[in-house]
Every structure is written in C-alpha cells, then in structure tokens.
Length: 552
Image (cartoon, rainbow, N blue to C red; front, side, top):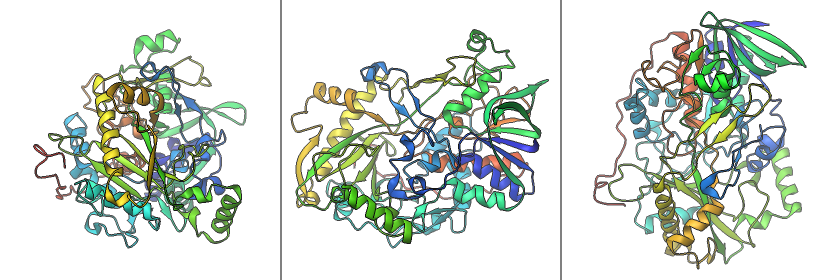
C-alpha cells in the first residue's frame, strides 16, 4: 500500500489537509486507528457527553497523578474515530483571540500572526448567524465547515448575557469577529441538526474526489531512511506492514499521539530515546515538552423555577428527545446547549480576555453522569493562559503502550490567584438582577466557601480539564533548539515529514481548540502544496480602549 501523501490521523487537521490535497489532485492515504463515526451518540449534538467516555471512540488516556491537584488522575479524552476529537468534542467553535496568533509570530512562528491566519479562517467557514446578530464581514461564507448558533430559547441562556452586561462587561454579537471581548452567543460546529465534524466537512468530500483513501490501522512509527521519511509502519488486521509515501508523511495524530509517534520514530530528546532503546534520528529536545491545557471549574447555582434541562433528565424524556432527533433532526437533541458565553479580562492591565465562560442551563458533570440536586444552572470558567507546562513522554519503546502524560497543572503560583478570581467574578455575574427570577442557593462551591484557603481546597478537589491539550511539537524558527517544526510545519532535521495539529501550537489560544486545529490543517495544506499563502488581512480587532486602567 502506498500513496504520494500519507496522513496519520483522520482528525480535525488531518481531514482538512486530506481535502485540500485531494482537491488539488494529489494521491492521499489516511491512516486512522478508530472506526466509523456513524450513529446517534456522535451525530446528535445533545449526546456529546457519551462518545468521549466510550472506549469505542476515545483513546482513554489519563494523566499521571497531578501533584498540585491532590494526586488526582484526570481524564484526557482524544478521538479514536473518523473525525478524531471533532467527533467527540463539545462542538464549540472559537477561533482564538487575534493577539494569540500575534504572540505565535513573536515566538518564532513567522507567517502565523492574526493577519496571516484570518484568511484561512474565512476560507474554511460557512457561517450562519441564526438571527442572533454577528459580524458577517469577518466570517467565511462558502467554506466546508458549517458554523451555526443554537436557538437560545431557554430564558437562562439570555439571562447570562444580560447579567454580564449588568455586571459592567461589554456585549458582543460575535466573539469570532471584530470584538472578541464580552458576553454573547456561542458558535458551534452543528449543521442541519447534526454534528458537523471534520469528517462531515472535509473527509467525505475528499473521498468523493477519488483521490483520498482511508485505511484502518494503528500507526507504530514513521520509517525514516537516510534522514527522510519514506513511510509508516502500521499494525493492520493483525499484521505489521509498511505503508509507503512517495512525497511526504504528515502526522496529525493529536497533542498526545503526535509526539509519541515522533519519539518512537527516533525524533525527540536523545537521552529519553536512549532510555527506551530507540535509535536516534534527530535530537529534538522539544518533542513532548511544552504541554498545555485549559482547566476549568463548574460554578453551580440552584434554580427556583423549572426552566432548566433537568426537566428532561428522566430516561423517558431522553428517549423522546432521541426519537425527535432521529426521525426529524429537530428538538432539544439538535443543540449542544452551550449557547451563551463570555470572554473577559481578569483585571486592569490585561490587554485581552484571559477568562472564558461556558454557560449551561443545567447543573451537571461534563460527562453527563451526575446531575446536581435538581434544577440548576452552571458556568464553566477558567483562565486561558496558564504559565504551567507539562510533558508527554514515553512509558516504553513498545508502540502499544500509552505515553505518560503530566500536565503539571497548577504548578505556577499565579494559577491559584487566577482561579480564585474566576470564582469571584462568576459569583458576581450570577448575583445580577437578570438571574433574580431564577436564582436559588449556590450549589458549588457553596456560600460557606469564601476564604482564599477554602477556595484553593475547592479548586484542588474540583478543577477539571477542558480537554484542550496542545503544544507538544512546538512550531518555531528552524534554529530554535526547542522547536520541533518550522513555520511550514516541517519537522526540523528530517526531510519529507511534517506535523500539523494542535501539537504545533507555540502557546495555547483563547477558548476551545477545534477551530484553530482545523485552521492549522488548512494553512499547512498550502505549505505542503507549495502554494503562496493567502493574502494577509488588514482587519484590526477591537481592544478595550481603557484596558490598562479598567477591568471592564
């Protein structure tokens, strides 16, 4: 089995690359370990809590004991299915703030400033305002990725935005447009009532060209001969074989599996590879390092009126919602129910938002397994730019062994201050008049939890990953010893090999990472094809005019 271009991973970036290469007439083969994405657990938006906890669809990774979080092991879901994590995520669509990408460029990722990446966001999007306002001049109109907004009929969803305004924060009709600060409606990768994953947006159109094939196999390592990647060793149908690539191998296997594959292939920290008996092809000490994520807390409030989704928690209602969706793509099953958000600054002197809210009109765990004490609502809240860094390392030279994942969460002292601020600012929003008709007692943390010490105990026990790992194959200048790929996504020190997914982020972006991961695939495809980058944009984002002296 062979192809011009072999892509490891049919996830967010891999599918985008496959589509653009196939569209250009190239012969593309994708290696994907997971199976089909067909079925209601994936395709029904409201069922989002199920696939990420199902072994069929999730790699099942978890962290090593996190010493600053009471030695808890935290789940690290990654999609093991067609569409990758875009098939199991919460479908929230956030580009990231303009300043995030300007910082990338300052960190050595030349050509990845906001002016450079905005045209790729425009190319990939087909945006639908859904009668909820927006900024159409900043949005794509005919791309493969449909981006929509939920119906926002629940009164709590609008109350959250109104409460943010009453607390003194700006409103924004489009946090992905010119004004990327404030409270407003959420965007989602949902279209015609179903999840619009990278598989639906990119992979299936790629296959229709006749130039893209998908094979189900487990990638064990990249074959590198005389400094050049020539293929991929896989386990396929119980047999180890080699899939040859006449032009390039592209790793798009996630922030967890991409560094693992590089290290198993001899690209990584020399001493670490030697420990596991792996011959060294290229000593790149940055492989697996720079691991980042967003942590979040669920601030939960009881509701005094039965207007929350708890009404539908009983099995009979779940069955009815499922039937409405299955037979008509209508009803509550068509939304992820993350329909309002907020991006705010934690204090004066912070130039752009560093806190994100996901509002949900039910008080529940993200995995959907435990509802709180009846009717309630919650905000998922957390800081966007933690200085804490972790690493993905090999536990063994055996490809079948999961890597060791250490995020080193909350290792930076400022993280604790930032999270306490998040809790207090969320409480302030929930205390506004807009919530007065609905607001009961605080479920979590609880009214008694007020001191710094008590809040820290709560954070230590309850902080959860937002499932946004990135940074483990950092992009940077070719002469940067800690960079793994150059600004064209080429692995430094190896010919014919690229990495293109969230692992190449120099620094985590604001918000959810699916959109920037797809954007990486879009931009990487032009580099692979040797095309000139899309023309830079001249659009300047709104920055709060008094950010140096005012928090809101």
